[in-house]
Image (cartoon, rainbow, N blue to C red; front, top):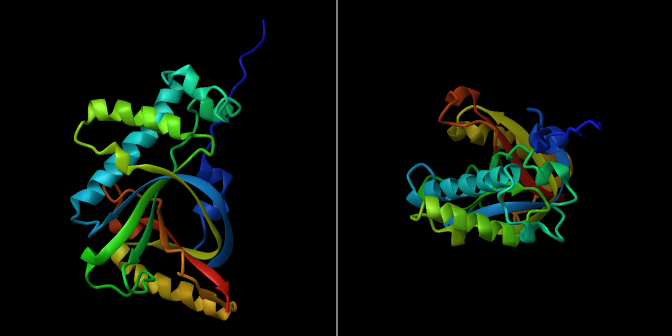
Length: 232
Protein backbone atom coordinates (compact mmCIF):
# COMPACT_ATOMS: atom_id res chain seq x y z
CA UNK A 1 0.00 0.00 0.00
CA UNK A 2 1.41 3.41 -0.95
CA UNK A 3 1.84 6.21 1.52
CA UNK A 4 -0.08 9.46 1.23
CA UNK A 5 2.09 12.30 0.00
CA UNK A 6 2.35 15.21 2.41
CA UNK A 7 1.82 18.62 0.83
CA UNK A 8 4.15 21.27 2.22
CA UNK A 9 2.30 24.30 3.55
CA UNK A 10 2.91 27.47 1.54
CA UNK A 11 3.79 30.50 3.65
CA UNK A 12 4.81 33.53 1.58
CA UNK A 13 6.53 35.20 4.54
CA UNK A 14 8.90 32.22 4.84
CA UNK A 15 9.27 31.67 1.11
CA UNK A 16 10.09 35.34 0.44
CA UNK A 17 11.71 36.75 3.62
CA UNK A 18 13.30 39.57 1.61
CA UNK A 19 9.79 40.88 0.86
CA UNK A 20 8.05 40.28 4.17
CA UNK A 21 10.72 40.08 6.88
CA UNK A 22 13.20 42.90 6.29
CA UNK A 23 15.58 44.21 8.95
CA UNK A 24 15.45 47.52 10.79
CA UNK A 25 18.30 48.63 8.54
CA UNK A 26 16.97 49.94 5.19
CA UNK A 27 17.78 47.95 2.05
CA UNK A 28 16.95 47.79 -1.64
CA UNK A 29 14.66 45.06 -2.95
CA UNK A 30 13.31 44.08 -6.37
CA UNK A 31 9.58 43.39 -5.97
CA UNK A 32 8.19 40.97 -8.59
CA UNK A 33 4.69 40.83 -10.01
CA UNK A 34 2.16 39.44 -7.54
CA UNK A 35 -1.58 38.86 -7.43
CA UNK A 36 -3.62 40.82 -4.90
CA UNK A 37 -7.20 40.98 -3.76
CA UNK A 38 -7.76 44.67 -3.18
CA UNK A 39 -10.35 47.29 -2.27
CA UNK A 40 -10.00 50.99 -3.04
CA UNK A 41 -11.28 53.72 -0.75
CA UNK A 42 -10.80 57.08 0.95
CA UNK A 43 -10.79 58.36 4.50
CA UNK A 44 -9.22 57.98 7.92
CA UNK A 45 -8.52 54.28 8.53
CA UNK A 46 -9.07 54.78 12.26
CA UNK A 47 -12.65 55.99 11.85
CA UNK A 48 -13.78 55.17 8.29
CA UNK A 49 -16.60 52.65 7.97
CA UNK A 50 -15.45 52.07 4.39
CA UNK A 51 -12.02 51.00 5.64
CA UNK A 52 -13.52 48.68 8.25
CA UNK A 53 -15.73 47.08 5.62
CA UNK A 54 -12.78 46.78 3.22
CA UNK A 55 -10.88 44.72 5.80
CA UNK A 56 -13.94 42.58 6.52
CA UNK A 57 -14.31 41.97 2.80
CA UNK A 58 -10.64 41.18 2.19
CA UNK A 59 -10.37 38.75 5.10
CA UNK A 60 -13.76 37.19 4.39
CA UNK A 61 -12.87 36.46 0.77
CA UNK A 62 -9.24 35.45 1.40
CA UNK A 63 -10.14 32.93 4.10
CA UNK A 64 -13.28 31.91 2.22
CA UNK A 65 -11.22 30.92 -0.83
CA UNK A 66 -8.60 29.11 1.26
CA UNK A 67 -11.11 27.12 3.34
CA UNK A 68 -13.28 26.27 0.33
CA UNK A 69 -10.24 24.81 -1.41
CA UNK A 70 -9.24 22.98 1.76
CA UNK A 71 -12.63 21.30 2.15
CA UNK A 72 -13.18 20.77 -1.58
CA UNK A 73 -16.34 22.86 -1.89
CA UNK A 74 -15.22 24.93 -4.88
CA UNK A 75 -17.09 23.58 -7.95
CA UNK A 76 -14.79 21.37 -10.00
CA UNK A 77 -15.58 23.15 -13.26
CA UNK A 78 -14.07 26.36 -11.84
CA UNK A 79 -10.77 24.60 -11.25
CA UNK A 80 -10.46 22.76 -14.55
CA UNK A 81 -7.80 24.18 -16.81
CA UNK A 82 -6.42 26.52 -14.12
CA UNK A 83 -3.03 26.63 -12.43
CA UNK A 84 -4.73 25.73 -9.16
CA UNK A 85 -4.84 22.05 -10.15
CA UNK A 86 -1.09 21.99 -10.74
CA UNK A 87 -0.28 23.61 -7.39
CA UNK A 88 -0.92 21.06 -4.60
CA UNK A 89 -0.57 23.56 -1.75
CA UNK A 90 -3.16 25.90 -3.26
CA UNK A 91 -5.49 23.17 -4.54
CA UNK A 92 -5.65 21.71 -1.01
CA UNK A 93 -5.92 25.10 0.70
CA UNK A 94 -2.68 24.29 2.50
CA UNK A 95 -1.32 27.82 2.52
CA UNK A 96 -1.09 30.70 4.98
CA UNK A 97 -3.17 33.77 4.10
CA UNK A 98 -0.58 36.56 3.67
CA UNK A 99 -0.62 39.73 5.78
CA UNK A 100 -2.70 42.82 5.13
CA UNK A 101 -1.04 45.50 3.02
CA UNK A 102 -1.85 49.07 2.10
CA UNK A 103 -0.93 51.52 -0.65
CA UNK A 104 -1.44 55.12 0.50
CA UNK A 105 -1.57 58.46 -1.29
CA UNK A 106 -3.22 61.88 -1.14
CA UNK A 107 -4.91 63.50 -4.13
CA UNK A 108 -3.14 66.54 -5.59
CA UNK A 109 -0.18 66.24 -3.21
CA UNK A 110 2.99 64.22 -2.74
CA UNK A 111 2.75 61.76 0.15
CA UNK A 112 5.63 59.76 1.60
CA UNK A 113 4.01 58.61 4.84
CA UNK A 114 5.10 61.64 6.84
CA UNK A 115 3.56 64.82 5.51
CA UNK A 116 -0.09 64.68 6.48
CA UNK A 117 -2.07 66.07 9.38
CA UNK A 118 -5.60 65.39 8.13
CA UNK A 119 -6.10 61.61 7.76
CA UNK A 120 -9.50 62.19 6.16
CA UNK A 121 -7.57 63.04 2.99
CA UNK A 122 -6.08 59.56 2.75
CA UNK A 123 -6.69 57.52 -0.40
CA UNK A 124 -5.84 53.83 -0.20
CA UNK A 125 -5.76 50.41 -1.73
CA UNK A 126 -6.16 47.87 1.05
CA UNK A 127 -5.04 44.46 -0.14
CA UNK A 128 -4.05 40.86 0.63
CA UNK A 129 -1.80 38.80 -1.62
CA UNK A 130 -3.36 35.72 -3.24
CA UNK A 131 -1.79 32.62 -4.79
CA UNK A 132 -0.89 33.40 -8.41
CA UNK A 133 -3.25 30.69 -9.69
CA UNK A 134 -6.44 32.11 -8.13
CA UNK A 135 -8.83 33.14 -10.92
CA UNK A 136 -11.59 35.70 -11.38
CA UNK A 137 -14.09 32.83 -11.55
CA UNK A 138 -13.02 31.46 -8.16
CA UNK A 139 -13.20 34.97 -6.68
CA UNK A 140 -16.72 35.49 -8.09
CA UNK A 141 -17.86 32.18 -6.62
CA UNK A 142 -16.32 33.04 -3.22
CA UNK A 143 -18.05 36.42 -3.39
CA UNK A 144 -21.41 34.73 -3.85
CA UNK A 145 -20.80 32.54 -0.82
CA UNK A 146 -19.73 35.50 1.33
CA UNK A 147 -22.78 37.50 0.26
CA UNK A 148 -25.04 34.76 1.60
CA UNK A 149 -23.37 35.00 5.01
CA UNK A 150 -22.97 38.78 5.07
CA UNK A 151 -25.48 40.38 2.70
CA UNK A 152 -24.46 43.86 3.87
CA UNK A 153 -21.04 43.61 2.26
CA UNK A 154 -20.59 44.86 -1.28
CA UNK A 155 -18.37 42.10 -2.68
CA UNK A 156 -18.15 43.89 -6.04
CA UNK A 157 -15.64 46.31 -4.45
CA UNK A 158 -12.99 43.57 -4.23
CA UNK A 159 -10.84 43.21 -7.34
CA UNK A 160 -8.18 40.70 -8.34
CA UNK A 161 -5.19 42.74 -9.52
CA UNK A 162 -1.64 42.01 -10.67
CA UNK A 163 0.97 44.47 -9.43
CA UNK A 164 4.70 44.68 -10.08
CA UNK A 165 6.40 47.35 -7.97
CA UNK A 166 9.90 46.84 -9.29
CA UNK A 167 12.87 48.42 -7.50
CA UNK A 168 12.09 49.66 -4.00
CA UNK A 169 13.74 50.49 -0.70
CA UNK A 170 12.20 49.12 2.48
CA UNK A 171 12.68 48.94 6.22
CA UNK A 172 11.03 47.31 9.22
CA UNK A 173 9.26 49.71 11.58
CA UNK A 174 8.63 48.49 15.13
CA UNK A 175 6.18 50.52 17.20
CA UNK A 176 2.95 52.52 16.85
CA UNK A 177 1.82 53.56 13.39
CA UNK A 178 1.96 57.23 14.37
CA UNK A 179 5.70 56.86 15.07
CA UNK A 180 6.45 55.85 11.48
CA UNK A 181 7.80 59.27 10.35
CA UNK A 182 11.11 58.75 12.20
CA UNK A 183 11.61 55.37 10.49
CA UNK A 184 10.61 56.85 7.13
CA UNK A 185 13.20 59.59 7.59
CA UNK A 186 15.90 56.90 7.99
CA UNK A 187 14.58 55.16 4.89
CA UNK A 188 14.67 58.36 2.85
CA UNK A 189 18.23 59.13 4.01
CA UNK A 190 19.28 55.65 2.91
CA UNK A 191 17.66 56.17 -0.50
CA UNK A 192 19.51 59.48 -1.07
CA UNK A 193 22.84 58.16 0.26
CA UNK A 194 22.57 55.13 -2.06
CA UNK A 195 22.24 57.30 -5.18
CA UNK A 196 18.49 56.85 -5.64
CA UNK A 197 15.39 58.96 -5.24
CA UNK A 198 11.84 58.11 -4.27
CA UNK A 199 9.59 57.67 -7.32
CA UNK A 200 5.89 58.16 -6.61
CA UNK A 201 4.87 58.96 -10.20
CA UNK A 202 2.82 55.79 -10.64
CA UNK A 203 3.64 53.97 -7.39
CA UNK A 204 2.78 54.63 -3.76
CA UNK A 205 3.90 54.62 -0.15
CA UNK A 206 3.46 50.96 0.79
CA UNK A 207 2.92 49.34 4.18
CA UNK A 208 2.71 45.65 5.12
CA UNK A 209 1.18 44.92 8.52
CA UNK A 210 2.88 42.00 10.26
CA UNK A 211 1.07 42.58 13.57
CA UNK A 212 -2.60 42.73 14.52
CA UNK A 213 -3.31 45.98 16.43
CA UNK A 214 -6.26 44.27 18.14
CA UNK A 215 -3.95 41.71 19.78
CA UNK A 216 -0.52 43.37 19.84
CA UNK A 217 0.70 46.18 22.09
CA UNK A 218 1.43 49.33 20.02
CA UNK A 219 5.12 49.30 20.90
CA UNK A 220 5.46 45.75 19.51
CA UNK A 221 3.67 46.25 16.20
CA UNK A 222 5.79 45.42 13.14
CA UNK A 223 5.22 47.16 9.82
CA UNK A 224 7.19 46.88 6.58
CA UNK A 225 7.54 50.33 5.00
CA UNK A 226 8.38 50.26 1.29
CA UNK A 227 9.07 53.14 -1.10
CA UNK A 228 9.53 52.83 -4.88
CA UNK A 229 12.85 54.22 -6.10
CA UNK A 230 14.78 55.09 -9.24
CA UNK A 231 18.33 56.18 -9.96
CA UNK A 232 18.88 59.83 -9.05
